[in-house]
Amino acid sequence: MKTVLVLGAGHQKLKRLDTTRHTISSPITDGRELNEVIWSVDIEPETKPDTVHDLERLPWPLPSSEFDEVHGYEILEHLGQQGDFRAFFAHFGELWRVLKSGGRLFASVPCHDSVWTFGDPGHTRVINAGSLVFLCRAQYAKQLGHSAMSDYRRYLVGDWVIEYQRIIGESFCFVLRAVK
Image 1 (spheres, one colour):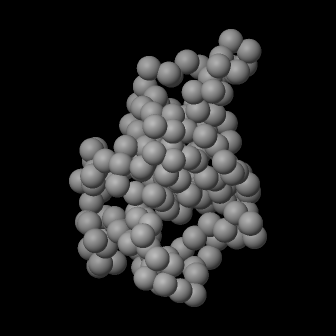
Image 2 (cartoon, helix red, strand yellow):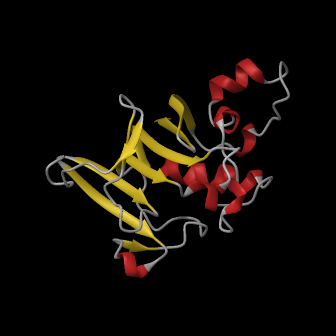
């Protein structure tokens, strides 16, 4: 049985990134048919999440190394502020903490050039392909000293492998695998 955490999904708890078809959609089946246990977290109680929680408040009230997958679609751009690297690494550290070894984060955020990136008054951060490099220790070894990359390794909790990244419509979609 696969355990899945869905962040800020509102009423769309079954939304999924399909990396083979390069789409984000809701599957026809529910979690039971997918052989999954789905746990949802949202700040809005009216969406009836399993846990009502503001994801800005750390640590999250979730167990460590519990989930095989975390799905966060159009939510990560609401966390922290642009330029607040401590919050950036703290939130991705929480994602890493709740995932099992080898667990995957499936996510989408508005593209940097989308009208919704900062047009939505709740969006506070841009995440793009360059942002993901800061989460991968192997990329630090390749880039640091050879690019404009700053050294934030002391703030990085855990390690990630970038498995997928692609622009789909107005969203930058990616999959990260937790290395533990």
